[in-house]
Image 1 (cartoon, rainbow, N blue to C red):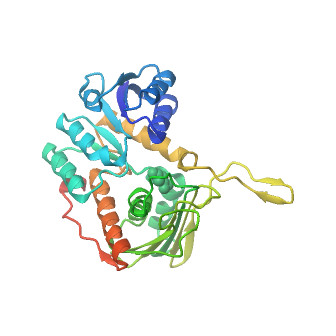
Image 2: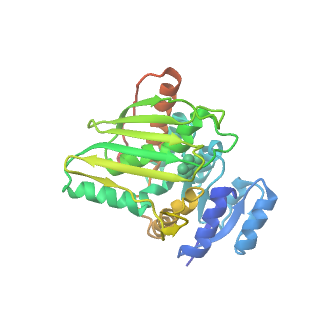
Length: 335
Ligand code: ISE
């Protein structure tokens, strides 16, 4: 039997998820959609005719034809929708970030713990990107020795007009925070945000360098540059004792033309992480069927940690000082 998914949010990510769910993921069908914009909802129903439109997302969550919920609405709405799902014990995948504050994340964790089972998955999709998966595998294989430094680059073409300086951390750098924890298998103990000369092509402080000090001394430096103009470009190189492991920019062909040779950068994260989004949603579909969360996927705990590290980053951005990360004890549910 198909698992019926209700989608909340039909913007950039929501409509991409709808497309992937209805064309590339087995075992699920999109049965409902909710978005304040009626036109956007209609577009989803057009491409996915099994979906019924709901004006109120809470009605969608409660509807008995919805077995699981995919939350892809604006960041500040996430935690209330997640709590509404947990209130009736409905499993969900919430786009990153889980919530906008540590307190809201902890409410989700408390609620999930009281249910004694994991119903929340957070959409940190890079955990399913073949490059990062291979980086983690090679590190754990041990042939390169211990990890020492991780260099990361996160560049967007142009940021939307509502992007503020703190959002470079809460909206973009959270991916670097999550993937560094995932690949290295360690927690972040201190964050420092350094602000280089600002680009003249944006009004906010852009770029920013986010330095993460892991609890075993590994340093992660992440350049976050959301108005880089030339293309969507995510890089990572892990420097180990006996060698390095670097992502190769994914592209199908290299074109030689007009005295140069190269490949095109995508314009945003959807094509760059297409395989990751698809694998993440397929893993979620299988987890919904089996009731066992996918090993690689981010839990509510991972969502909380990313937000806690990001909050330390915000303090460092404001003060210019290194800022300690203080985490709550990890509940057994997330072991
Ligand atoms: C966006 O919200 C995403 O999640 C993308 O993956 C990220 O690269 C981008 O910087 C964010 O704004």
